[in-house]
Structure formats: structure tokens, C-alpha cells
Length: 118
Length: 107
Image (cartoon, each protein chain N blue to C red):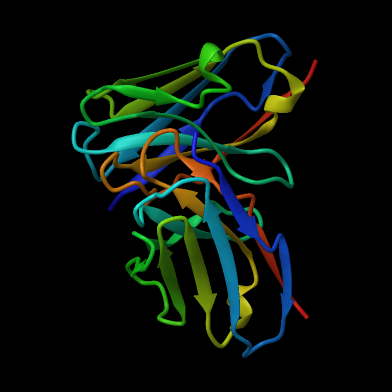
């Protein structure tokens, strides 16, 4: 069955770099894309970035300068890096299966909470 | 970027009622619109894709409609498990964008 699982540090200091990993199973990263979506506490959903089945990438225009998304197909993992973290980046971070042609997220991970604090 | 304006922000309703949530896109998204349900502490779950197609396992009391820039999600005969937050999402292209959400509460 399709599964996605996020992992990463729960606490990051301001100005540091966040590294998150999404490990997938039940599908191939060469057949489907994966997006990252975040949700600050008590707020709505914000799309962050995607890596598509062919390896191309897209980013939230407001965050683009701070983001990098990549993948390791041999490990079935998608990696997200965000630098220059601020307290406003405190959020639950989800990865979700995406397809550029379909346009929707049909499977989601459980999420990982990231708190930016000194 | 395509902006998604969702209304209302909150909605209070009783069991058995029918409710409608609206989503307005800043430009034509050609029915590439999805709706999600999210319960507290859980990840969002896909309800509707392509504006009106029901995702696998979603009860038939949920339905989606619309075209162009205007879309809606209708929930018939509200059940206790339907009280949650709902989000629309533009999927026409990247960047993906979400509506601000609607919190559906029990009256």
C-alpha cells in the first residue's frame, strides 16, 4: 500500500538550515511526484515545493530562495532543505504524493512538527 | 500565482443539515480543483478531485461542482464525523495554492 513518512529534527535554531526527509513506499518516485506542504499551528495549508517524476522541481515563489528539493530514488526518499529559518517557519510539515498532470495530493504522510526556537 | 478565495471561513451547522463551501480562483483553472478534509491533529484527506470526482472511499453525501473560476463543495445530511476543516486547492499547475480553509462546527 502507498505510504509516506516524514522525518526530521523537532527543534531547529533560528537562522539554521532545516533538513527533512520523506520516505515513500508502495510507489516509485520515477512514476509519481512528491510535494511538501506545511501548516503553522492553528493556520491553513501552504504548498512549499514539489519534485516531479522526471526529476524537475517547482517551488513556492515566496520561499524559493531558501529552498532545495531533491530525491534519492534508490532509497525512495525525497529531501527538503530550507535555510535561514525564522520563527514563522514553525509548522507541521507534510509530504504528499502529487502528479503534475493530475493536480491533487492523493496520499499524505502523518507530518512532522518543526519548531524554530533558540 | 493563482489565488484561491474560500468562503465562509467558519460555518456552524446541525446534524442532518446540508452545507455548501465556495472557492473562487483568480483565473480559470479548468476544473483542476481538489477538496480536502482535515481533522485536528491529522493530515488532510482527499475528498474530491477534478472539481467533481469523488475519491475512493469518500461517502456519496460529499459532492463537488463548478467550472472556470467558481467551485463549491456540498455536504448533504451532515454526520458527526463531518465536523472538520475543509480546503480547496488549485492543481492546474505549480505553484499549487490552497484556499484559507473553512472550519465546520456543530451547532
